[in-house]
Length: 67
Image (cartoon, rainbow, N blue to C red; front, side, top):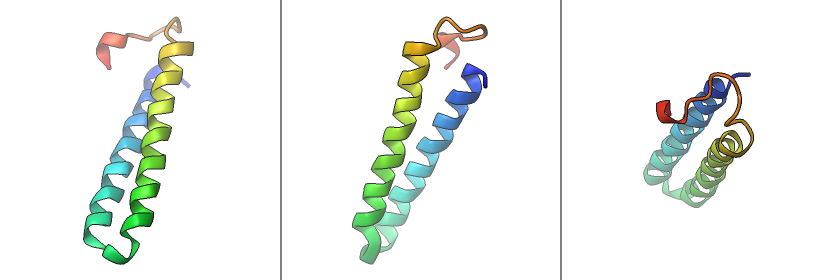
């Protein structure tokens, strides 16, 4: 999997996190649970980005300026 593909997955996870936050605002009975899940998804996205930065920055095709 290329570095850009991993970063695209991180972006998708950030989008899912935002969607869960929106749902949390709209559904009070499950708001707290959705907010917790949103944070977990967001943290996973951030960890993927850190992984790329720390472990894969020397990989062919990695251009930190493009992300």
